[in-house]
Each structure stands twice: as structure tokens, then as C-alpha cells.
Length: 469
Image (cartoon, rainbow, N blue to C red; front, side, top):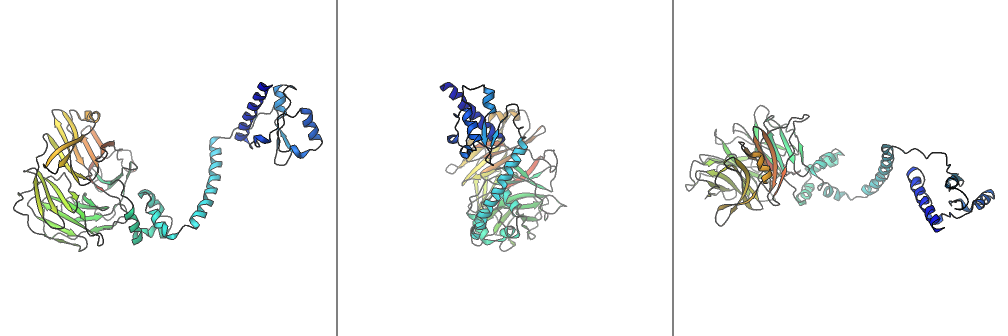
């Protein structure tokens, strides 16, 4: 008898699963009374006894076959009458997954809408900006289309203060491709996604390249080294800088810093050429000034490494030079030039300065015989010597064996993007200076196309919604 009761309990569980899938669920198990005899069922039913309307009834286990048991399983319906599962009638057909999901989503949506209405109805107005300031950058731009009020947050001073309190995320990279030099592509390393912005204010009849960045702004210089432009690639805030007072037709190195006085804001841009001529632009004054001549302790001409962008640390810009090899620095606050003679590692090429948490980093290709590898060095402040701290994984470096590889460093602050290319290869990788993590970057495809673009140059910038040119 105990074995038969166990089989019956198993049958009830299977039946409950079946009804949960296709129809109304069973009543609680406590309300089930499976041990009524068949004749008692019939008597209660014929006498109109309604006390068992919410109960399940089964035959006595000794009174028939399994088919008889199934034919006499009855459940209470909503109307109070019993419904019988007929043994010869197949169960209802199973609904397709898409229909079941659609039903669930409809139910969920309606309940969510009610919940959202109740929440947002009582949501304090002064917290809207604090919440939206913490949204991911890409999400914010979708939310701008909700209403004019949310779209106006970009011009709100209080919204700027909320954004300033949010910890900075990974920098983005603004790049220029060989195939389309008049339009840029932005890479978001957090989402591993490329974006293709359109900066309508940039000139289209000349090639304009990103040369520096600071505080969410990117500085552009035309290929003729005549005109400067500053833009926020996210918000299209744009400014064309006034003409320089010194006409320089040779190539220049450019650096950009934020003003140390946070209350006044603004930024400064420095350009310097090989003969020592240089000027500083102040955004608050909207003018160029000549701070003075290069001190005699710095050897001229400056053999500047134009492949390496300037590094900004504490209001000081650092430029790479050769002959002699080392670093030239300029303090944007005091206007003082300094020079440090630092011999470069042997067999080094395509090297670039970078910085992370106050440390100066050197990134370059180390080539010996037919083997090529990307190496990372850190400048030792006491000895002014480069110390190797990391290398690209050997399995990746095998792809460079026997190839003439060229490298461009597109970012120089904490997170680096390296463009490695040869005739047979075009690879993008990122390197996190803190975690020492190497990651491959998905290819940058032509908008609305499948062709991969070859990245020519670029710069890293901290995405900021409230930075204005």
C-alpha cells in the first residue's frame, strides 16, 4: 500500500506540472484528498455536496486500472463545477515559445509601467540630474530625446557639478582612418564599440588631425599646420582658434592642459617647433601669447619626436626629443622650460611617451634580428633611466616575426591603444598600464559597410558631457 501511495503522489506531482504548463495550477497540496472511494465521490456529487468543490478526488487504488484512475481525476473549476480529464482526449497542444514569451512580456510590461509611474510620479526633481549624470554616455544621448528638459541638462550648471562628482571611466579614443581622413571614429573600450560621429564644423576641404586632448576636449590641427580647432566630439561644442601671431610653416608639436584654477575653468594649448619658436593659447582670453624665447641650456634645433604626443602631468607638458635623446618639458603655469637627457633603450623604434598616475611611461617596438615585440618602460625618477616593466604576450609577437611592423600609440594616459600594421597585417590592441592587461580591439568598419579601416592617428580623451570649447 505504501508503494502504491508513493506512485500516486508521483502521479499527482506530474499532473500538477502538466497543469502548470498548460492551464490553471492545482490547488495547494494540503487541500488534495486522494483517498476517497469512487462510490463516495459519486454519492457526494449526486447529493450536490458542494463542500468538495475545491478538492481533487481519485479512485481507491484497489478498484481499477491506471486508465480508470486517469479518467476519474477531477478538479474544481472557477464556476464551482468539476472538470474531468478524459483518458482518450489528448492534452492541449503546447503553445510556441514566442507566444508564451509574448504573453509574459505583455504582462510584465503593464506591471512595470504601473510601477514606473508610481516611482517617477513621486521622484524628487532635484535628483533627476544626479541620476542622469551617472548614466553611461551612450545611454544619456538616447535619453536626451525624452523631453526638452532632459535635453537642456547639457547647459545646466548644476548638472555639470553632478557630472564632476562621478568618477571618470576609461578614456575613449578619437581616431582618423587612412580610408576617410575627413571623418573620425570613436572607440569606447568599456563597451568595445566603435562610434562614427559627424563634426559638421570641421573644414572638409583640408585634412584635420587630432593632436592633443584635455578635459573631454580634442584639439585639431590642419595638415598645413596653420589653423587650430577645439571640439567636444560628444556634444559638438566647437571653437576655431584665432590665427597665430607667428607664421610657422614647419611641423609643430602640440600639448594641451586644463587651467589649474577649477573655478575659472578653461584650457591652454602650447605649440612648439624645432627652432624653438612657441606660443601659448588661453581659452579664457581667446588669444595667443609668446611667453619668451627658449633658454640657452636647451640645445637647438629640437629634434622632436612628432610621432609621440605630449604628456600632461600636473600642468607640465613633456615632449620627446632626440640628438640628444631625452625629454623636454614646459610648465604651463610658470613658463619654465627644462631638459632631461635620457638615453633610449637599444633597438628601439616608433617609441611614444605616456603617463599613468604621475609616472612617465615609454612604449615602443623592440626589434632584434627578425623578432619584434612591443615593450613598456617606466622612467626611474632617481636615476633618470628607463626600466622595462612589461611586454606584449609572446604568442602575439609571433605574428610580427619577419615583418616590417610600424606602430602608432593613439592614447597616452593610463589606457593605451596601439595600432600595429604591416603590408599583411592591421591590428589594434589596448594596454592597461595599471592592470597590465593586453586586449585586442575589434576592427573599425566603414560606416554602413564591411570593409575594415586602417587607423592612421588619433588621441585619447576623457568623455565629458559638459566640457565646452
